[in-house]
Amino acid sequence: MVTCLQTQLLHTPFQFRSSSSKKPTSLRCSAATSSTKKSYKITLLPGDGIGPEVVSVAKDVLLLTGSIHGIKLEFQEKLLGGAALDATGVPLPDDTLSVAKQSDAVLLGAIGGYKWDKNEKHLKPETGLLQLREGLRVFANLRPATVFPQLVDASTLKREIAEGVDLMVVRELTGGIYFGKPRGFGTNENGEETGFNTEIYAAHEIDRIARVAFNIARKRGGKLCSVDKANVLEASMFWRKRVVALAQEYPDVELSHMYVDNAAMQLVRYPKQFDTIVTNNIFGDILSDEASMITGSIGMLPSASLGDSGPGLFEPIHGSAPDIAGQDKANPFATVLSAAMLLKYGLGEVEAAERIESAVLETLNRGFRTADIYSAGTKLVGCKQLGEEILKSVESHAPAAAAV
Image (cartoon, rainbow, N blue to C red; front, top):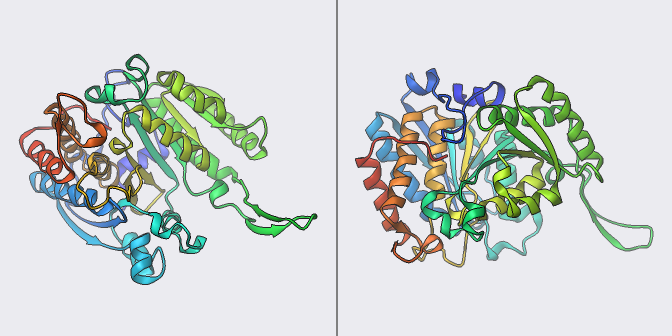
């Protein structure tokens, strides 16, 4: 399904989030305020490591929130990644992709682990994730990096650097060097073994992700930074050419350009200079993880991946953390916030999403923390107890300002 919020995101101006520092425009549309469909099919992909633990919490939060807002959610759990490899011999079973395509939205936990690190490429858990994204035809990956006031001291940066950071990385997801051909292994003229990949983008791939980013920037702070390596790479030169051409349609958005190496440095030097960043697949993969650490923990950040049609894919940006898997130490906040993005952008259920976002803020306000965000004076709890506290906040508090 395609909600009107998803259509606005991909094709027309819209408001991504509400913040005192951003333009105060309503996010609501007809699908979000008076949805005619109140029953949805959600595919759950717990995956590996801590994935099952955090997805379990998010599922409970979705069920409770749905019951409060009159939304029926039907869940179907499927295998992906290492769990799928162990059970079926492939990282993305046909059945998983088929069920995901037929659902209204997909919620993923995490994939990967040491156990499968030495597998051949086609038998790596990460290959399953790439195949899933390609199969769902999602191309726009939205990764917000917002420093919560309650967690500013958890950032590895000084308070004066981290406080007030609120940026969005818009990453192209299904093109570039991760998918480009030719690729593979060979031998050079000296008889040495070689490995090679191709960074390639077609005009329509750049235009569609740039349009998403311009629309987001237009309703945030009105600033868009396109990150490339146009001083060296032809693919980046073409990227910049297309982004500059499209900018003529968005005269109200201030467009700037930055080389990726400088952008990596500026994110830790002065991150508040950024509002919305748009970049290619590999640069976005790296920069969004870097931006996440500004917030204090990768365990706090959700993401959404959307296409022109069909279900969106929603997942925390953290990995499978095999070192703490099964020990009740995982931070479920990012997965819960991913569930909120699922409701908002996948299903158009904005009020339900806002309830979850408010519940996360309220739980933080009440001082509950997992080990990765713990500080003196707060309450150290495990994944399960934190989930219970979030449920209490969902049940007792009305929606407030959006968190993502």
